[in-house]
Amino acid sequence: MTNVSTNRAVHAAAPPRQARQVLLSSLLGTTIEYYEFFVYGIAASLVFGKLFFPSFDPLMGTLLSLATFGVGFVARPVGGLIFGHFGDRLGRKRMLVTSLLMMGTATFAIGALPSYAAIGVWAPILLVLARIVQGISLGGEYSGAVLMSVEHAGAKRRGLFGSIVGTGSGWGLLLANLAFLLVSQLDDAAFLAWGWRIPFLFSAVLVVIGLVIRIQLDESPEFTAVRASDSVHRFPLAVIARGHWRQVLLIAAGMISAGVVFYVSTVFSLAYGQQELGLSRSLMLTLVLFANVILIVGMPCFGWLSDRIGRRTIFTVSLVALIPAPFAWFLLLNTAQPALMILGFVVLFVPFVANFGIMPAYFAEMFPADVRFAGVAVSNTLGQVLGSSTAPLIAAALLSSYQSWTAVALYMALAGLISLTAAIVLQIRAADTRF
Image 1 (cartoon, rainbow, N blue to C red):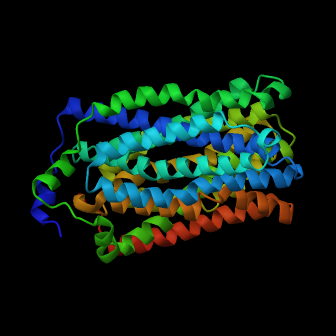
Image 2: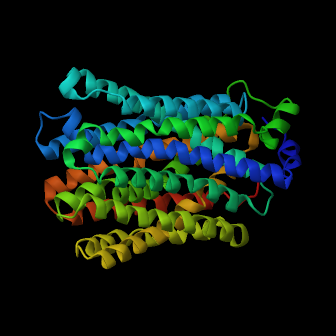
Image 3: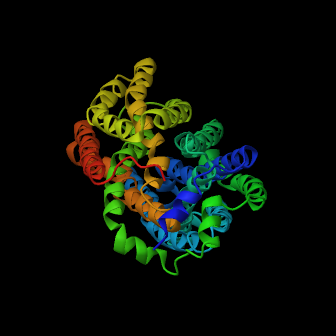
């Protein structure tokens, strides 16, 4: 096990210029990864049911399409295990370069993939395989990018740095929605024929830029110190399994609410708005864009605040608010009045942003440096499977079964209750430590 003095010796921040460079590069890389991951989610909601599952009725085609979206989340724990193991053995930097390259290759391949009409059943099979690669990649990307930034930050800026990198999910979804908003201006025939492919193919440009920047980064000072002290574990996952499995399970459960809220509101809502409310694709994409502005602006604010008042209070209060918020969101969304729909996203996203914004630093503080990548990666990917992976699919199935948004809102509220319970137990077990 790691010597305690070793962990304490590396608390100093990296030089400010180096820390800022790592922060910006981690944010850019995470943005690219999430852009590529989210263009799939948007396409799954709008396009893939028609192109890859055309033999089913529209609702069933959408359900199958959203099921392939969930496959990426099922693959994320595999990525978490792989990247977590090597991230604590070989370093954060190498894993970040590898994950970005994998994601870019898979996303470009999807953009070039023939439809069911061209190659039959091979089309959905290849689609699922590419989605699996995307999931494995993102399983290591988020954890590595967060740790690179948090471990370069000083003791008073970990919440801020982690939250800024966390906005990469918002920037990625913002870019993905902008890309689809632009191609949505095409007529339906052109959009289905080739327009939807442009956001996928464009990712190749972003990946090249991201790789050039990441290759130039310095390794995390905390991992460098662990390696210098000969504290690198041969099997870091085994150390996690023996000594930190409770933290892993509680953190994963604590993430369920954020995952459900985010993916129901940004993926399921696209289909819900069009099919149930008769709203245009452009309006729904615009609303999701607005929600991501809240995320991008709000996360650093709450991250900064957590550096001053601690993370436990923010995490708990935000989960309490996320239990009733889905009901207000649906009520305002169902008015079909743009101003009230915007208000609904504000009501839902403010507590979500508070919750999600402090996760990077808060959860990183639960593990020592020698097994931090493995601990964060496994916790994060397991939480994504439990909360995010099937959220759009479950929401669509509940709506189909009960013909009412209330069932979906109850599902979101239950997720909040589960996460709140896990957060309380986690806080009982662990103090709000500063690693």
